[in-house]
Length: 173
Image (cartoon, rainbow, N blue to C red; front, side, top):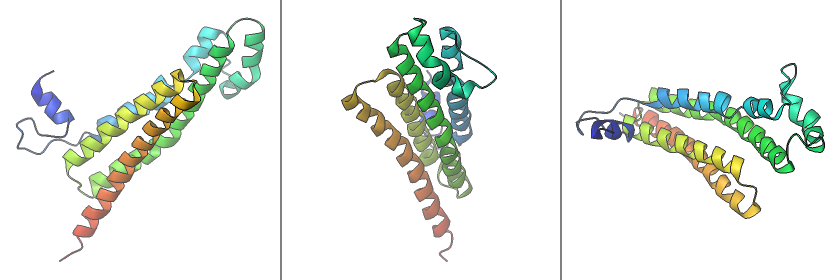
């Protein structure tokens, strides 16, 4: 990866002097697709043979136990599928907070390097959160997942806080 690309991703201009572009829209696109497409349980339910498009939100509750009893899937697979659905729902619920905080920061003219860093922290935290949610079934390790969830929240709170500071600084004459 060229150093100029890495510098831009980390919130610096390609020459180190010019202000970087605002990457928040690209993080918004990524997080939208991640939440709505990549974390969707539809693919797994298709693989496991009990995806019903008529009412897909009830597939796991209506057909999951039966799939285990019939030997189509294991209990561990069903539990992972339940965690997948929870991770998917959480990502969709959290997405508006991210977009709102990134928009506030952009409108308030928070420096792009601050916005880019916070958006990168948010995106990485959300991916780690999802991976941990899908793979961790140990109570003690599940707290690492909670840490990534809080990290994504703090990235949003940071953007909102910086927005407030930037907006209030403009009021001082």
